[in-house]
Length: 155
Image (cartoon, rainbow, N blue to C red; front, side):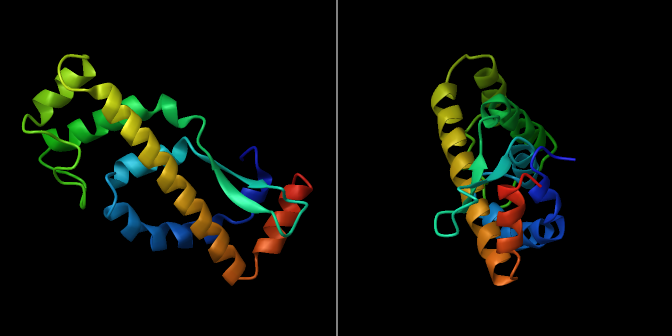
């Protein structure tokens, strides 16, 4: 299981939030495949679990830097298959498509450093939006206090 056992207790609630959040992903710059990769690199923690007034779910995105280059590979692969993420058509690509993606991966042409920086910022922002949505969902279902107490007790 995970390093945060409290998250194991809310798997069903996470699935519900995943479904609710899917529209937000479609409106983002990321495809569903890219979002899945981002979520595998994200852990959720409850800050200040002992303080009911300050406790909140935060996205720990420290591992996202390691997958940022792979996001481009996922996008390039989708473009090569004739696919593309709904809602992100044209946002991440320039006129060269796959060729530009390959050139960028090789560090030739374009400003891949800037693109990676923007992807990193967007991924971190979106994962925190997800964390906020998850907390709101837990509160509305009366499960927030149970999750908070479990996090405070390391359960």
